Image (tube, rainbow, N blue to C red):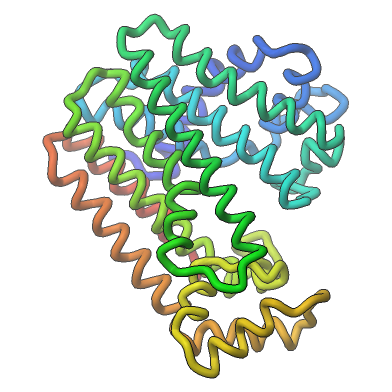
Length: 337
């Protein structure tokens, strides 16, 4: 059994040639901006090898085919497709969030403008479906349907996330549902699409999808904890980064829903205007922790990860691939907090 980092490195090496070939289909301008976003070229077009991300979703896609006894090559169109959808969402997210850098490089919208970022993201989304449908596999249509449904849920989660900014109160169930769409949906599809392309039984596909969904929720819970209490040296973000934006993340929503003086003070702070100072940020983080937000989020992440592992153990899968899926899920979720 390989380690999770080795699995991710192998996945990146496996899909990159196919991903580059897919991006080459785009018009010149979209191709240039997508290649820049993936870290293949500089803004001026010179070849480079910038950080292109971990390739978690393609790794899940390839492993899901192996888990049902198929060669990983069967899942290659699905692996490319989920990576294209993931990066479509990143290009658009950077614009919506006003983020000027991603992986220590200027974002597409910052270099070429909002309209170009929208069009480049749209081009990658359309290309993902084209890659699947051009695969020649008899299972291409079900895989394309899965990806289309997934994209709809991903967008639903993003819509909910934006709407939460205008709402004084967000129920924890609503916040979890948002995370299931925004983060869980694509991880769920990634963990199932290889099995779909391999023609696996529905029960097996469903188990793999549930595994990915629960890993996605566990990841988001931990990510939200890191967004408040994470070490900048580990996360690459400033301390209290999510609080600085007064974001109603999962630990915040839990704290707000507990009632009492802590929740009232936190709610008043979240609705205040202006750039928060460092003392305010420390107090807000303290309120969330004292109301149980941090402990709940970590406990819930552990519970979701256990559900993910139970899903895999409930169906017959290749033992080696199953262990790699379990290790990959733990690697994604178990970060320094």
